[in-house]
Length: 133
Image 1 (cartoon, rainbow, N blue to C red):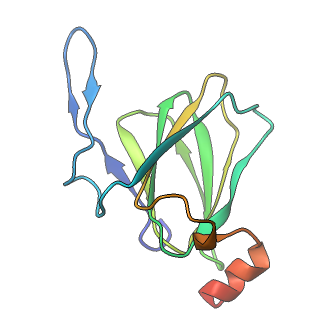
Image 2: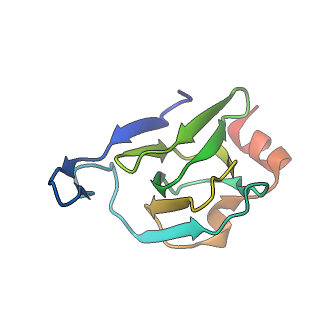
């Protein structure tokens, strides 16, 4: 997988009544500052289309599935998220695009920072300059 991006298993407590996924401070390499989620995304739409200068993010498919295309300016890789007990940790300086959302898909994002527009790189050419590609 590209750079320091990786799939992390989310601990779960299995129970006949249903499973419980747990995200606590030891799971992620940062303090959680913001949590948000994407839902009702049309299957032909895409989200993302940006990179972060300093913010780390952890993406989880709580329901359904979607693809995350990650790009370090030189190489691209597509990861399918479709299990609520696995998440994708995205490092800084990684361009990401989310696509191919299944019906009812929900993407939970656990972020290391509060929303700060200055942290976003929204132009791909600016991103390539940022990473020196």
